[in-house]
Length: 550
Image 1 (tube, one colour):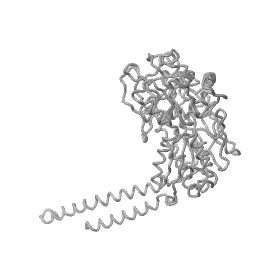
Image 2 (tube, rainbow, N blue to C red):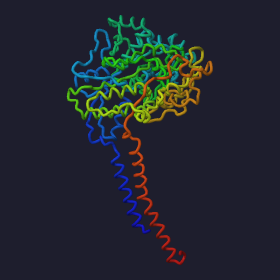
Image 3 (cartoon, one colour):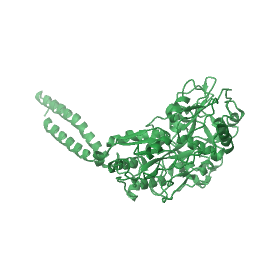
Image 4 (tube, rainbow, N blue to C red):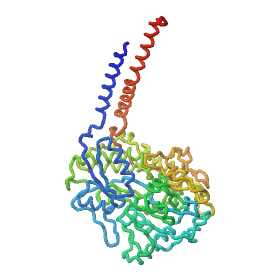
């Protein structure tokens, strides 16, 4: 067959393949319109990743990380189409109860799970400390200006293998209305009430409740910064040795800095790996009363704080999207269609990315509940929970029988993480691998797009996923061996009675992807095969002319 004939065939096949692949792209892309949201900086790293990912489908999703309080207010005023917040409306903050919108219908949808961590910058001489451990009362003492030096005896008791320097502690808090602050102070109200009440008296807070705006005593040495990015940026400065601030785990991973291992109710020091957060949140009480939209799917974390599973990270929580359920403030059906598809993406395929970013993928019951909430958005096109949709939801935390696999496969912490005379030397957060006895390591924090540890080993921070298979040892405790009850033996339920639902296959999977691969292969063939054939034909012709061929 002549070269020109091969070229025509390859060209025709390439055009056909590209045409078919083109029709397999999201048909809704032409109907998408820009949508805008604002709010939580705690959730920002996940939301920012999702924004970039859905752009390939024609979605333009704007998000302004101005803090949970501002986000809720902008949604209430109709300035944005949706919001993200770490706490719901109506939480009592001193004398302010932040009432929900009265002129706009809304619904909460869990969007990210994760841990509020204590990122720090500390050295012993020239050696960087990356394996710091703290108990709850010590953390409260630091952030209420009672414990002010790093060599305090209470800090030393938590860290038997470290001789910390006598330098000043610089607590770094949020200057803006923050869900991170609300979650942190809620934990202090629940577990360190005396310390928080005494601090409230010093700053003149009455009544002494949780708060979104951290009160600072003038001249105390406490530093206030805007946003999780502001707090992490301050702590990460070279000249900020001695600083410690609270942020979402992903910020410590991104900056390559360590986080405190917090002592849990089982007397183990843990950090918020995806698995440890998933185990902790098995004990969260989720309000399932749909008669009150202002409370439906809100969380009660009191049992999370006291969860006696050795793997639990105490300051674990969920954050929410606040979704519109009425066509007010210019919210159109086209915006609803776009927001609905964005929500479908983040509940399923988007959850596959969050473990590597420093969050923990949502469990099966909240994914299904999330789809129920998406169906309330005017103009959204969201499928019902069918078996086929359940199986196609690419969320890594569950199987189709309702098991939370992320929690079930989470390994127990090593014995050196138990309170006592031993202390693990392994670094944490974005500084895994370093400790005070070794030279300062090169920061190894997990960056956006990195993959979690597929082995499910008990590493930390950027070196661990906490969610991989554990080769049958998920229920094994390092001190007592294997518990017959697996994950449930420590007191937390391992089964969740709910069924997930999924995003449609037009989000990067199924037929469209296969056709694009075929089209790509045919294009390669178009460029490579004809020259090869032409070269072979020319070679045979030359041999025939020289009398060497047949």
